[in-house]
Length: 65
Image 1: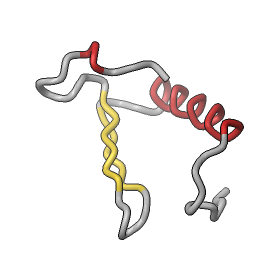
Image 2: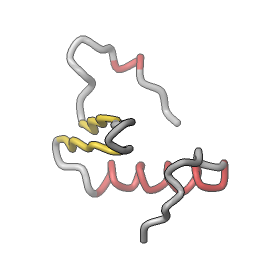
Image 3: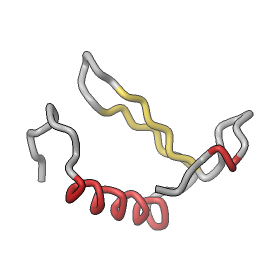
Image 4: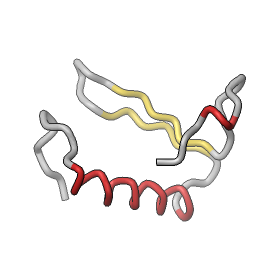
């Protein structure tokens, strides 16, 4: 299902299931890493999901949502 509301920020009601799906993906869908490109051509965002912190970044720098 695609919702074409990319020009709007997530509401609090949308953010909660987004984080739930993200946690579920991390537990059951992520092998070693996943590279994603989201947004649009003029506002691309590069996302790296990984089982290890970025090189040179302490794990304490990451926060739990």
